[in-house]
Image (cartoon, rainbow, N blue to C red; front, side, top):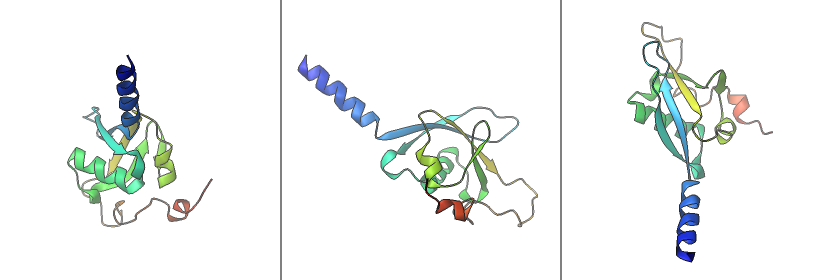
Length: 120
């Protein structure tokens, strides 16, 4: 009985090391999400962007914004730290045929540089 409780507690602790999120790209024809796992020890905006792009098979340069559904833009590490298990996120991509004036998130490490330095 003690062994069972110990292994259950160990599994629960290990499960808390990862944050599972549901992500997709904004697309009128595709509504399916995939699940990604992020390490809670390094839960950053950049890590979310990199893991999401790798899992979805898209380039970092294509991403313009990250939205927490239904209507919240994620801008900085503090926003990422507040995410809960299985929250739904959407990556907004550069539209085809758009001029270079639209910069991707890789060109600007944070959507709002001043907001990245803010603390609450």
